[in-house]
Length: 240
Ligand SMILES: Nc1nc2c(ncn2[C@@H]2O[C@H](COP(=O)(O)OP(=O)(O)O)[C@@H](O)[C@H]2O)c(=O)[nH]1
Ligand SMILES: [Mg+2]
Image (cartoon, rainbow, N blue to C red; front, side, top):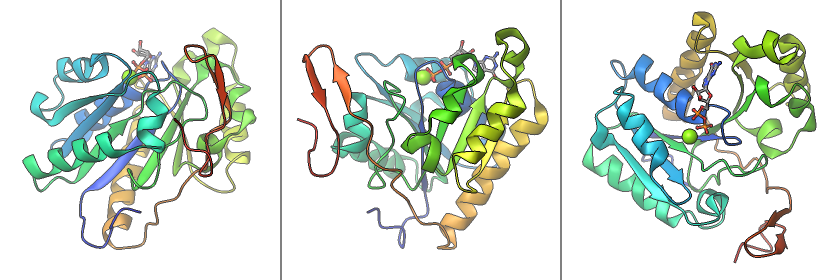
């Protein structure tokens, strides 16, 4: 478990499937909050540093504060089973730019059920998008059910993809036992304010000792085409 008694930098994970808007949300938080908070970013790409390059080119943060961890074929492993490379990257960034308020860690996003280990992040948000279909929120899973925040992104696309956004948000809420859900769009100012308000409140609660890092739980068994093997990732059977 991270030592939250001596750290003042909140490590915030952003997980969710590819294309749901993780990099965009990190860019949004940087754009909205960089004047108020000292921020850093770690990305987890499979073979490239594409997410880091996208974020640097967005011009919302000093490019030096954005670093990529290249994770190989299994990005969920690097945020869950063996977090060493990520932890070193986070610690280096925190040391180089001390004192940071928040380090955002983007997951590689290879799997609907991949979540962060509490050994790496203090809090995590899980991102779904409206374009992925209204029924995804109902499917549950560790990230949807137990991440600190569920973001249902791209609500502006609802009318174009035939998704009832309020229903999708309600389904997310039903899966979460009272944990927060935000329906987000980069075109909806009120939703952006909700997101930055959540980041602010989570940092405050982390620093006052009121926040406990939770493990959303192991990911679902899944298939690795390259290894031609099924894996069940859990504590008893770590990834090899
Ligand atoms: N319509 C719409 N598109 C969005 C929104 N946020 C992100 N996107 C788009 O979704 C695509 C994937 O975003 P990205 O941040 O790269 O997703 P990631 O793979 O989860 O990091 C990009 O084309 C973004 O421009 C939004 O609020 N509304
Ligand atoms: Mg990305």
